[in-house]
Image 1: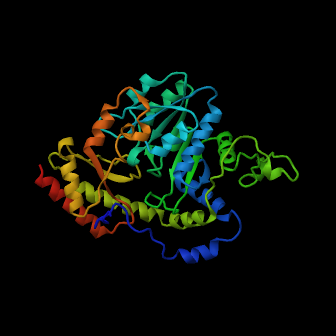
Image 2: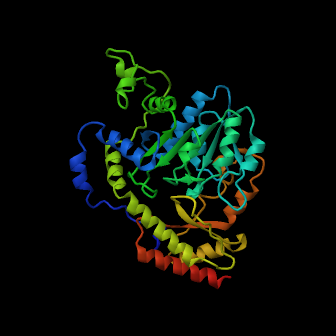
Image 3: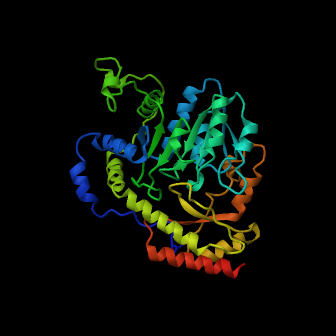
Length: 381
């Protein structure tokens, strides 16, 4: 049985006070879904939001959107560091997913490697802002536009991300978020699909609501479903049923009220780790000054010391995790995926791990955990 670490990556999501909010706000059908859409849009300056029941469902909806928009194009490109359900959303729909190497010394898709893979058969490029670090969209977005491909951003490990001084939504066609409880905003489950046009918004809303035509649930004035008994049950495309629940939406609204304080706590924890692990020979950390909301705090060591050091850190009660299992093609389910070599991705997977900076962690525990890791890394130099 796995022993719970003394210093975990995440703590308990605060629920004290939610009962009162729930009693006031849970009532009229779809009230919280509508309110959360508005409040989340205002907080993130997100253009068009569709709420779903998980980040994985958000990725599935995005994949269906790509399939409906791409015509005969069948290829999808994404980085070697990609989450399983992000890939499966496309492969299960029949796309040919091809992996692309990550940037040297970083976590995200390499624009130079991507350039060699682009052709007229590419339906979409799926960028994962891995661990909350921003991909180089300033170089990637023009490549997708030049080849007529859609740009999908898996932003489930970040929120409020700024890239080159601009919101992530200004770069691509669709972005996805997760509100799983260890992530930035907890709804105890849930996610969102964000698009940048009314045309794509109508498509996504239809996809996640059974493929129906009716738009009354978000824009009565623009609904053109036929009148009569079939108004709510007229289907213009194949779809799924993955809308977020009212209860999850209500909890997300309650959590959103403390969003600035939660983000401040996350950054406070980041700075504790950054200060504690500064200037240790043989240990690498990555600055996060340009992105608003990183997911975790990554640490790099030499591949030869990786296993010994991570085991020692775990033995001292500090939870560390691999980079989501490392390069995805190492795993049995995804060994069939084609690629032209993932040298940088494999190297980063063999030498990097992460610790938690989650807002639910206790300040003193973060200080003690970082001091413990520093002591171990210094002793190993």
